[in-house]
Length: 346
Image 1 (cartoon, rainbow, N blue to C red):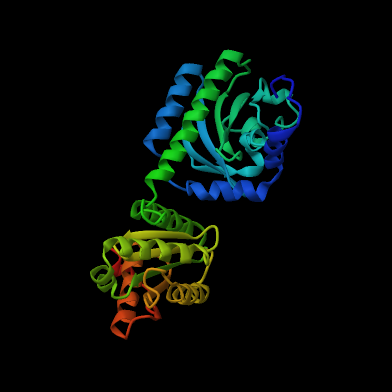
Image 2: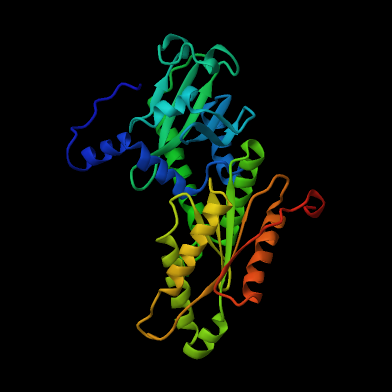
């Protein structure tokens, strides 16, 4: 660690330090960004490229520390997307507020036997600054790595710290761009991004993942009778009703108009059907002061991800179930019972 004197642990500092120990809350904060397991993005690659050039290091990365893995959101100088968390230097970085400086990993008991030191890429020196969220959780690190021992100067660490703040700003902007302004649900773009991530994860380890699509019944009549501002209130209330049912790692997205989608990681078709039915009941129980007699209902389609599926085929399969629910009388949930065939995916 870089030599420094820590401030007294009082007031806000004590609260901040307590967040370093709350791993469950830290992982929940990371999950809210919905960025782990997503592909590289130019905005982050520009930062790591600049840091590598300015600090004259062969390797620079933006890392995010998940429960069991280190996700490399951007990396210069190496290939790859992830490493196990237990060998990640950045897993040490997130345990403190100050930067982690390792002048020579072979002389540091914490890292001397690390396979990233003893084998490829042969890390010898490391400087990492925590990526601290606005609510005080260290989500990962912006790190500079060399394959030769070196002392990072105070000026270089200050530069790294400023670039780390830019990374967090980009993460915040990315989150804003991924939200529907009216309902607070995820945008269609964000929804598609997460679906792509879950598809990638499913292809890797076949973890169960389900999808719910639902559409508000006769929504046009609500707009015609009460006006579009009241229709907007209905959409916001429906999104709020859903958030009260869903788990922290589920994603509610507004896909367009009165159509919503929900991605349910780690949940099979039976569990997804139960969630859909709870949501259906929650929506129909919602009341509005400006129209006490108004009962809003929704029709639901549910499916689980199948081997060989594409995002388009998965959405289409679930959409078919949704429209069967509408054709059969609305205000019900239909489960897709036919998996997509490989021939139908392309």
